[in-house]
Length: 299
Image 1 (cartoon, rainbow, N blue to C red):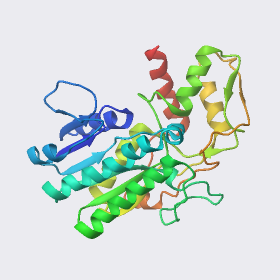
Image 2: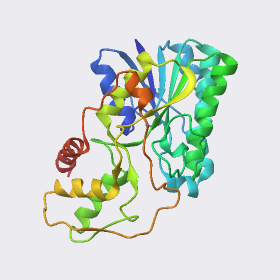
Image 3: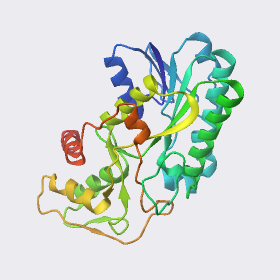
């Protein structure tokens, strides 16, 4: 099996590379970094052209793990976020249509497409109502995947990732907690009230879920949630994280100021994923223990 991973040098992309290589699959990597390696293709970040890639190689599947994943950035630079998360998907699918119509396309989307629902859990058939440019751009990318399936018969699917964390991640909630803890462990300030809730899934479970979707799901232009199925408040997540810190007297508090574009609750219905045979390996405490070990070894 030959797999192309776009965004191979990022957090999720690199974990996907390691996972599929461990399965003895033929993996071709592609990203914007300048790397000299036989299995690597460098993408022009300002004007990506995928025709050469799909002309010179034959792939069973293309997994798109590229793009920006920063809500604040999407407000500050909406065009750049659109280019990264939406236009790139169009260019990839157009190259597949022109050169390799049998290549499956799996696009990493986000729970941000749902917006701020008070009802939970969120199933894939809920109408999307994003509250950030990032959420809209991920949703547009999903629609493009559907377009190319319906109109050009390409095999596409979008996976809506909820709150991914784990070794190698250098952004978002737990990384932010770690950086603030190192700066001042007596006064770690966290955004929001602590009552906000997310569905956290360790990176090893994420790549396992993506593998299951690839092997068992119909690539019919639809979307599927990837999450644990368990909702945790930010306060509960922070308590678990701080219990694992080296300094047991570390203190944290909430500012009660929310970040623009951040939903209050993102709780996933993973019925579709469970029907494919997915069960998470790690609970939050176990996953954060692995992440904490990585953080301490990194310093």
